[in-house]
Image 1 (cartoon, rainbow over the protein chains, first blue to last red):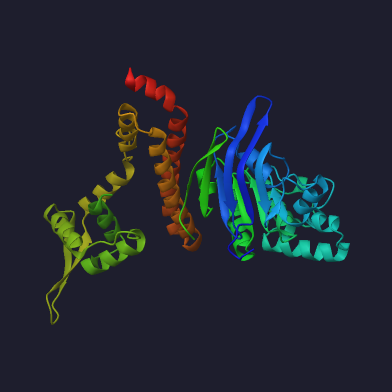
Image 2: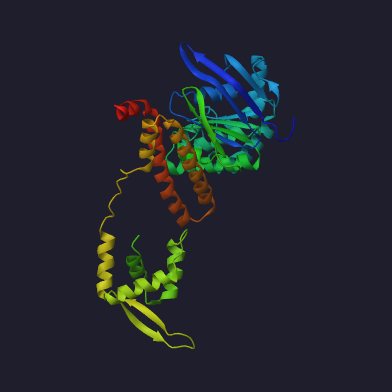
Length: 229
Length: 174
């Protein structure tokens, strides 16, 4: 695979839930280091598309490749391993483990990979520092503000140095100023480490942090536009 | 923006030459469009005629004489009145885009494509402004934010119109 080959290649993905066609023949590439916004109204299929790309949901038909490897044919265990090692996730409401401290939350993906506690926490502390939330390291998520919690969640997504971060409405629960700070830090860190970001959002101000956007409507991609970087 | 009022308000901070006024205007407000000297001197001449500024001093050097201008009491009153009057919120009722969408529907063209192309153009500008905002100072960031929020309003309209195209088509064709 060449340096410019896409990390993720989706071809003609379709997914139906009951009688609802959530994805209807979607094709899309995600390249290393690019920040791609997936936009569209509620129920358009953008979250289903993200879940398919991340290997969480198996499409009914179509082809999905990660670094050339066929993910549609991969076993559940293989796809789980891929998600742990290669992908990072940021959700709308942080989804941190409430019983653990923020530092332990960030260290968790590394611990699950078998990294020793001391090393995992050293690396977690580094990412909390990068995200400017070192101050909440010893606190539980419930003791941090919404904006801080979301930055902890980003640190957790980046701590394994993934190739792709999937962010689903990462600023949906934040006010304008906190949302802006979260987007700025997420995109800065991703650009510095050449991590691709698939950013699912219905907010144009959030999509404006991307390099390009695709718009999903009724399970199909409407248009692919955006300036070259 | 009212250039007369802006210059008057800048003069309230102390008498200045036209050259200094232009420099100060550009530093505060000229991010994208610096003033031309001609605009400054033409505006000052009008303000002088209306008694809102006066010539405070004239310097005779080797070249042409340089006038220093000061705001008058009437000028200060004028600025006060301007600052205390709200700007009329603009009614964006005559949207070119709306016209384009309706015409596309009436002529059997793809109206959704008109909206898609516009959305991409709006997002591109938002992207440029967002990048500029992260690199500039606070003043520049606030100017960018103002533009970004207006673009965002347009984008919301584009989304809503996209979702209502079928109904709109029925109405305009009936």
